[in-house]
Image 1 (cartoon, helix red, strand yellow):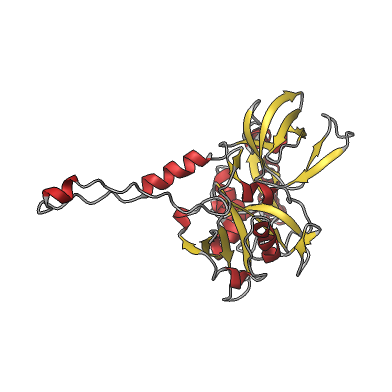
Image 2 (cartoon, helix red, strand yellow):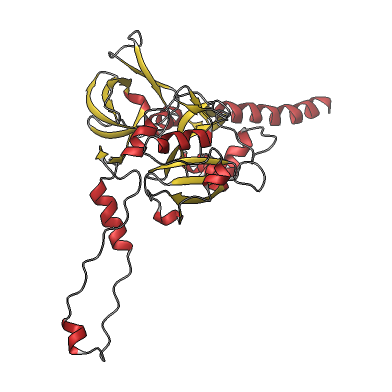
Length: 329
């Protein structure tokens, strides 16, 4: 009888060991905008499958940089790692798919570092050498980066494309009334005036307005509370500094900046618009500069530097308040 009991206990234990050994996992690092649902979807899993292998105290409080186990079987681990990021393009436009990437003077980890760039930064790929890509940043700097850190993306929009999109959104003109007099019908109509130019529309290079290009030059600059200079910024200090270079004075306060300029809906955002967030309580407490394609550049206190983040999902999507278009008077 005792032997039967022992066998009854051993059998489930063996099956558990076999099941555990059959299920392998890979490690995924949480990126900005991720949630457990999006991570599960990205790896072709159901949410319960992900929760089963991760002992999470609060599944709704993921932090960027957290390590999440991804269950895989057989050769799926290698396959999952290969498909985690789209292959880097041999030429054309790409964006960085991780933070704090070194741009170097030559295709070697021993080469001198030119600068440090963050996730979402767009670059133009000029060529490929082994595991390295030669790229050009939007400020004109060229260098080398490991190709695994690049994902294909759309080129920045040109000024003509932005203008065309704006024109397409304008409502169609109302038809003339049947009762209008012949004189009114034949009277020359005034030419439609050009829309007032925003402060960032004076010149465009690589498809980006000048205020955006200037803002992107400060990627990686340290965050300093209360600062508004090239050696460091807080969020409103960064936006006020960038616009000051274009002859526009903004208050050094995000809530005060929200009262300046023209309100803009999310669907009408243009590069150069200020975007605002509630990150503490009900008051507006954060501001950045929209750069297109659902991204914005800002001085982040959480990450300690000027960086690019997304508006389309995650932390800033949930805390988005509105936007303002700043124009020269």
